Image (cartoon, rainbow, N blue to C red; front, side):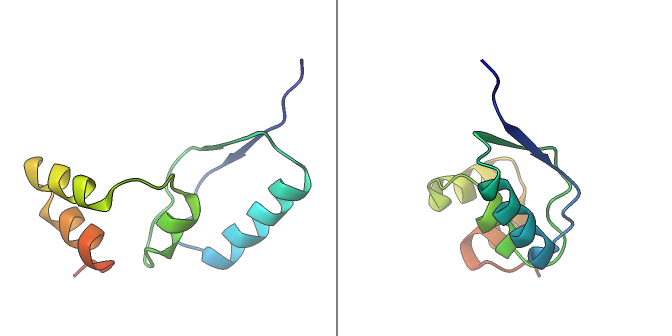
Amino acid sequence: MNRKIAIISDVHGNSHALKSVLKDIARRKAEMIINLGDSVYGPLEIIEQISVPYNWEEAAELAVQQERYDWAQALKTGKIE
């Protein structure tokens, strides 16, 4: 059986381009999207567009356990300072 798989990479925070690509992927009825990385630069809105929803509090706690305080802050506030 042939499956339609879309591969995206190097979004670098370009939300406008990502929205266009995701619309095209939906139009082509891809069954799976694989993200190769380099997605975030700037707005955290990109994370919401490409991530599978999960428990943000658990993710922030894990970030603290791994001493990634910048990520814990970003997960809780939506901002990187």
